[in-house]
Length: 214
Length: 97
Image (tube, rainbow over all chains, first blue to last red; front, side, top):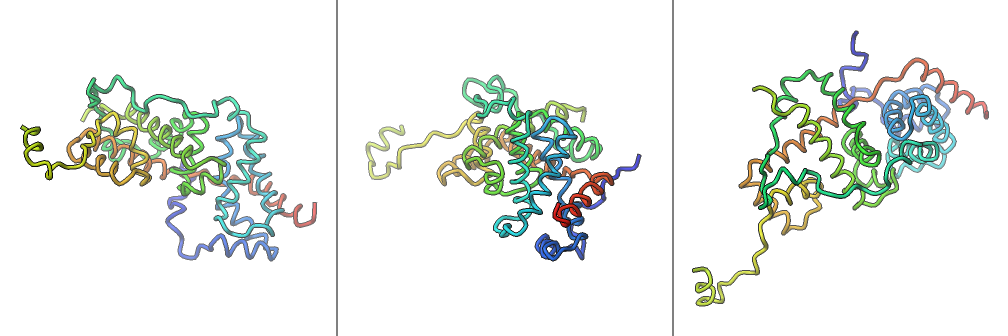
């Protein structure tokens, strides 16, 4: 099977890629193609975010469609104070939360306790069982597609609220202010969730990739 | 040695010493460090610890690598079915439906 994903990343802009602002202008003028281009650009990320909130793909697709419709209806009111992506994500999260069951299962506060197991430190607080090396493994030995698949699986095992923050900050690369806006959480709360989520991901990568024969 | 020294030359006494960070504290401060949310004093303590601790340096590098790998995850492409659904959605909206 050929990997259907494009060889370039969103960030590696194509020379003639139109800005969201330009597409919005055309969309407001009634250009259907501008809408389709925006959908092509943002739908994947929206679906990924929706899947983080709701239990099934069918429901996630529904939430994404609702979001697009709400965006079209709110087009006139969108002032461009946040990026289009942040605005779409905000609408989506509101819709997903009213639909979502997945998040309701999780505890609303961050879990307590240290992010690295206390047993890995000596009585003086210094590493007794230091981090196992795995960066070399990740960068040079493991196949990129397999690594991405592993990361997706690991991300999915995070507690819902940590996963949402890590997804928005580290995968979608939103600013912390935008993440707070999208999820309606405080800066401090965001940082705690990010800290715990990232630490769990790192630990999972260490467990999966660390200690390989070198 | 240290005590008689500061008693003999009290004007050389420095500010009360802030204890150095230990590894177990450093791992809890990593996110604040990366977010630039540490106070200047804590930032200095953090940097000082890193300079002498290869394990925490490795931990920080792994945290950065984790973030980098997450940033490389690409979303799936639009399926033809979703494209059709959303185009229909647009046309219905345009028609005032």
